[in-house]
Image 1 (cartoon, rainbow, N blue to C red):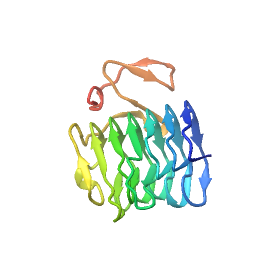
Image 2: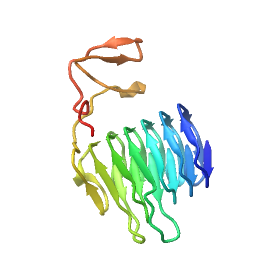
Image 3: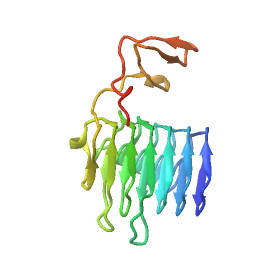
Length: 219
């Protein structure tokens, strides 16, 4: 859908869906770039061979992914996002905040795959219901330059023990608890709340029998 090379665009309030790449980045491919991707739905995209069914970040610096829903994407590595550095240089290539990953699939890293030289930060995120033989939610690969992933105040299914690979910074505020999505089978990833939430199907406010453990649990 989008190829971002050596640029810094803002991609905002978009739905990016049903795209296919023969190699990397089914929905968005970012190479040596610093995009801001905000308030987007990235769904049902495919990277047929390598990384990033939803988004691929290669050698990006200061990329931002904020308040996005990333679902039902697939790839060889990183069904939701695949990231790596380049030219033996480490990059803090992407900061991921307030995002939900669900129903993505890959051979390695159902939601997120972190490759060589990649050092992303993830905070206030939900990773739930993604699938992969290695790292259903998160996989860390690569050997040199070193890759790291910093995770805090996030709900990750399986917790730290289900993360594949190493060099993981599992910081404060993380939980492993059913986020209580409203109706994920029909694409509604609002969180259930006894205090009330918006029902997208009925177009009204409604109250639930339970409250998501993710509400008021962020940073």
